[in-house]
Length: 478
Image (spheres, rainbow, N blue to C red):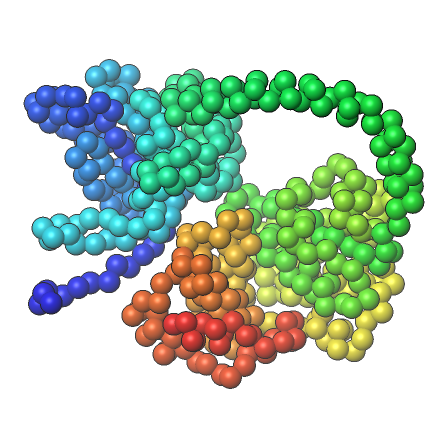
C-alpha cells in the first residue's frame, strides 16, 4: 500500500454551477485555448464570482472544455453567476450550456496534488447540463425547488420533465430563462422524446375511439350508481381533523422551516389524543395553506374539521394564527392569535392542541394531558436547530442533501442540549434511514462521533411516549 496519507473526503452542501463550451472538440487547439481564456475572463468579471471568492466561499475546478464552480453561500449563488449569459451577447463566438444542482460535494487532492471536487452535487449538475444545448441554463428539480422560495425567480422556472442522462440515469430538469438570458427553446433531447410520444399518442387514438362507444353507452348506468353510492357514503367522524400546512408569513423565506416545525409539533400533540381521528402529514402535505375548497379537501381526507394557520417569526418574536373550520358548511368554529417570545413557543403548541380537543369535545386521559403540555427542552436555540432538522426530514425526496442537512442541524440541537430526547430520536432515525438507503456512509469520522455520543439504553420523551428504537439501529450500523 502507498505510504502517502489518504485523506477522507469531508462532504458539505454545495451549490454547483457546471459550465461547458459547446462544440469545443471541433475547435483548433489555438481556438480552444482562446475560448477557455475568454470564458475565464467572463466568469471572473461576474459580481457573484468575485463576492464568493472574496469571502472564501467558492471552489473552482477547470474541466478542460469548461469549469465547475461550487458556491457555499446560498442556492441563488450559481444562478446569479449563470446570469453571465447576459454578457455573452458581447462574445458571440462563446457558446455555453450550464447545469445547476445543490448537493453534497467535498474537496479532494488528485494524483497531481491539485485540488479537485467530488460528490453527488457535482455529478448531478453535469448530468443536468448534458440535457441542454447552447444557451440553456438547466436546473435539477431539487435546485429549482430551493429557488422557488425566492419570489423573483418563480416566473423564470419552466419544468421540462425528466431526461435520460449518462448511464441511463433519469434526472428531472427545469429550464431557467427570460427575455434577456437563457434559452427558451426546448432542448433537442426533449424534442426527440416529445416526437416519440406524439407518434405513440396517435397510434393509440384509434384504439381509444373504438372503445369510446362502449364507454359512452355505460356512462348513464355508471352515473346513476355513483350518485346512489355518494348519497349512501358514511359521514366523516365528528371527532376527526386534518392539519393543513401552515403558511410562512415571515419576511425571510428561510424561516419556512419554523412554520413547518410548528405545524408538525401541533399535529404530533393532537395525534396523541386517542379520542381524535387525526390525518397524518403524509396525506396533507400536498395541499397548500388556506385553500379555497375546504369541503372538498375534507371529503377527500375523510374528516369533519380542518385546522389551518400561519406563522410569522421576526428575531425572537413569534406570531401564530390558527383557525378551526367545520368542513360541512365551511364555518369558523374557533380561532386565535398567539404573540409570544421564542422561549414560550411550547405553550402555543400545547394551547392550540388543547383548544382543538375542547372544541371537538374529545376526552383526554391524565396521561394525554401531560403529553400535550410537555416541554421537550428548555434550550430555545436547541429547539430552533431541531425544527430546522425536522423541516429537512419532512421534505419530499429522500436524497443525500436533505439527510446531510438534517444531520447537521440535529447534531447542533443535541450539542446544545444533550438531554433533548426528541432531537436524539430524530437524529438516530435520520442516520438509520440514511445507512439503509445508502445515502450516508459509516465513515471513520462518524464512528468516532458515535463513540463520543452519550448513549443511554433508551431515550424517552414525554411527547413520543416511547423509546427511541432508531438509536439502537444506528449504533449497530455505524
